[in-house]
Image (cartoon, rainbow, N blue to C red; front, side):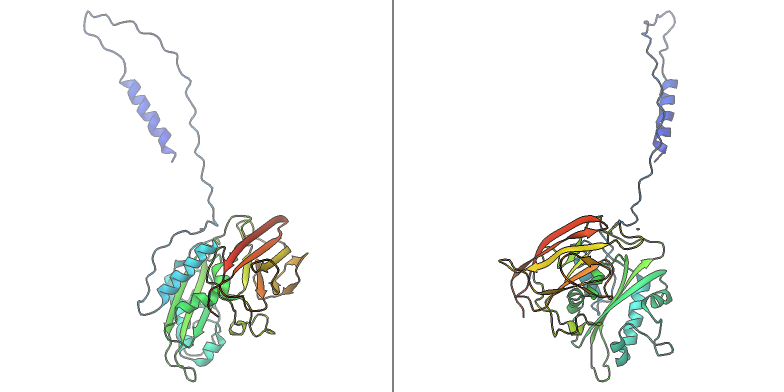
Length: 356
């Protein structure tokens, strides 16, 4: 997160060869004279070095998950890991305790319409209660570490493909794709009939980091982004009032948010590095700059105006167009600034889909 014997064997073999050497002649036979050899200076065996362990190494492959075929959990697991790989965040490994915690909270939501509204909260003493927050529920399920949680619900039966897509097209929930977590548990299934609501597709994901593990993080100087470079079919609109909490509530709708994350191996411990924004803009074909809001927490700017947003992670910056994007259009994003006093820049493009 999370060979020294070779020299000894070589010495033993050398001693054996020397011991078997020399020529023995028969009686009356003169052995030919031998040319004395110059003795060699024995070499001092080198002490092998211990490889440096990269505790923040990213996970590149994980075992195939085992999920109930009647749920959409396997599909959501694959969608989240596929997008994390494209962003450069490393893979998440299925965890049985986190699956159990996710299932328990899904059961709690499925049994109570108010629980669907409260989302992450559980009330002690109520039916199905397993913990007041995600970490408490994970620990109750046998997980030794901390956990975060994402939930998505829609009143369409079997709409499992919408879970990952909606987490991605958001300001706060896109964090699942930047998280340094290593373990994950999923449940994506259609609920029973909830009074006054009907059936819902509800996806619950529990992301965890074991107590003895370090976050998986990219190399120093990396800027991870979503939409990622070259991404196609990016939504043109973000219905911000469907996200809780609601980003920029004064707008009825927004363009698809653009997220930048600066957390790396160098900044994975201690205080978050100072991030200064010099330029940050999204441009349509032909140039110009779209009207957009810049949301950040504990960052400063010499260029665009920042709207302080305490719901964002310290390492995350959001650029949110204040109107729908155009369909079937390629946009360019430019960022320059400093992270921990070091100059960082990134320019990339993405393309919107044809849908409205």
